[in-house]
Image 1 (cartoon, rainbow, N blue to C red):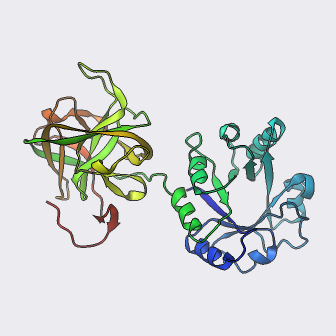
Image 2: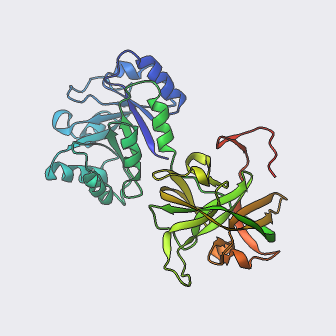
Image 3: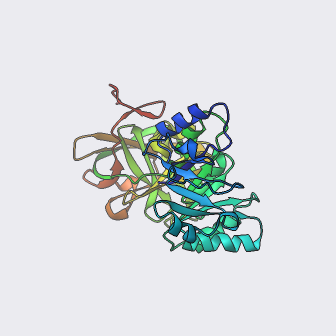
Length: 367
């Protein structure tokens, strides 16, 4: 889980409401310049003192962690000896090659590093994260807004351990927390047993082209009903008559559900360039990938019916063609036209029904 720090040092009129929202959203830390702002906070949130440009207060008991500017306040290791009950971290503003070296050193050696990159390029952050790859400390990056936080969370795939955001209004703590958890959780896949396949005539099917190459046993989950989906294979495996397209999944009919970030479903017809969809491998490991485009074309369609060990019926309608594939146990690649009753395919059974794509506990029948 990515760390979310909320910086209230320069928040004015709505400070109480912003702090209340932050606590409700379970942000990881509140950052203040005055120990008095930290004293009333509950123990459920980390209290971070960051007296940037100011002298270090004599009394630090209100803080769990103090971020210091070494040139002004002293080295974190020395301060830790003087204040054994308080953690210390280092602030580095990256403006040139020398300060970048300082940031890399801090990321490797310090328990906490708070970094501010003056220039908008993310290459210096990539360098710091690479330098800190095997380190035990945490790197927190100062960001200007939630959009930048989403980018920082994904730099070099691993991303920064956390971000610090100064909210401009109530609601941004909620947006930041949502951005932090948009990294996908792994799923518990099940083995479904095919009960039959049948041709169902012509219709529109969607190919989902992403901005990412899929792995050999990776695809997206697709189903006619929100209660059950089948893992559709990407075009990473050789096909006759055409080159591989490892960024593509020939996914299914346009009405079908697929999973996106935060457990939400989307119809395949709703996916657009720049949107998000969940890539899942045969072990259930998932990641959020960006949609490049969706191609919807009229093709002959094939319905796949399957059932879970618990009796949940699952349906998937795909293009009726040999080169369309789904994944079976162990990542086995299965051509949809060759499926027979008894064949095992991998699938997923969401627990909740859906309303406009969001999970909801309500009565609903799909058939």
